[in-house]
Length: 378
Ligand code: NAD
Ligand code: UFG
Image (cartoon, rainbow, N blue to C red; front, side):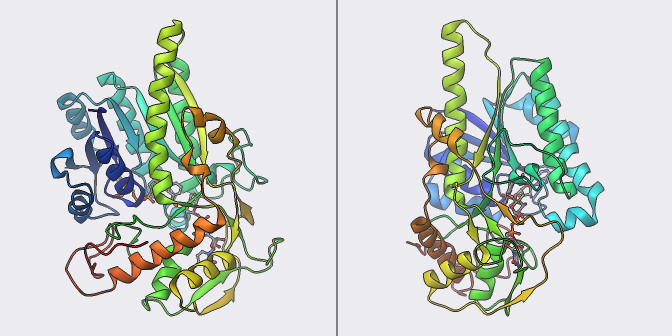
């Protein structure tokens, strides 16, 4: 047995993919999720993929519920925590900053206090490349952070600072901060993927809904950026690679701990890793890849740039590569060829969801879309 991991936000998009890999790797998993942006239906799909329904325990709980979170840690000696749970809609966070500070910072504060009290001090935290603000790409882990333009990004930056303070005062904490660039795609089983409630904010799920006819057309936000085709550049990384990176981070921390113990040195650590591919794609390039993968045209119009968007964000992944002996390899493995593959998988997943064959629900959402369980996307 590889250990017992608490996964906050484990029924969500990245969380559900990570739970699948944890279970497949032999971990015991407890998911804590309020279901504010996901559905309990993810649990049966995780079980269907892994074939191990008993490997996952689900606790429906808001992390801000201090008594509930404390009781959870009192009942179970977790070996580590992967902390995904957060609200993540940039636009909403501009309109409702206090909601984002309350949920993302309040929940994290309760979690960290409960972890400290229980002596569970191993944490992998989901951060975002938005902490780099309008930094100049390629962005490396030591690129300047700050100058965030919305409460979502600020909540990630403040949490990073909170974790640095915790590690500074108690050097027995082991913390990996993972700064994701743009996770996209779906599990090859076709059973889990990204299915946001309402109209998607993000490019990939939006285009997929256009492809399956649920939305009429894509509005490209800005074509006057100083980029190769005038549209903004992002670093799209497959969600399964992001998920796998969490297992690598746990393994890497364990290895560091063993090495430190053997050397009689300090056992604590605080490390930052970019999870991107190192390659940027423009909006038009991503759309073209999806068109090629699906064999369909995406109707689109050019609109004004979206407030707060940066022209280009892509990762320098040298640090992840260097840690690869550790190994944190997978987020560096994607190429443009791979883009076509993951777009095909994601398009297939969206197509399966809109096929009225069974009543299975998407990972998130309202259940209005139906899934043909077992459709494999290759
Ligand atoms: P998601 O919304 O699909 O998953 C987040 C999960 O957390 C949801 O299931 C939600 O119900 C749960 N949750 C939220 N607040 C909670 C609370 N207070 N208590 C308990 N559960 C709560 O989002 P995701 O795309 O899977 O993102 C996971 C993490 O990765 C988030 O922290 C997000 O900020 C971060 N991230 C995501 C992206 C991205 O593009 N998807 C990029 C960078 C960082
Ligand atoms: N875009 C469009 N039309 C749309 C949606 C997006 O042209 O309908 C463009 C955006 O302007 C941007 C690019 O597509 O240039 C990507 O936009 P996304 O909303 O998909 O991604 P962002 O980079 O803006 O933000 C995402 C998540 C954040 C996360 C960040 C970094 O929304 O939560 O990636 O990981 F923090």
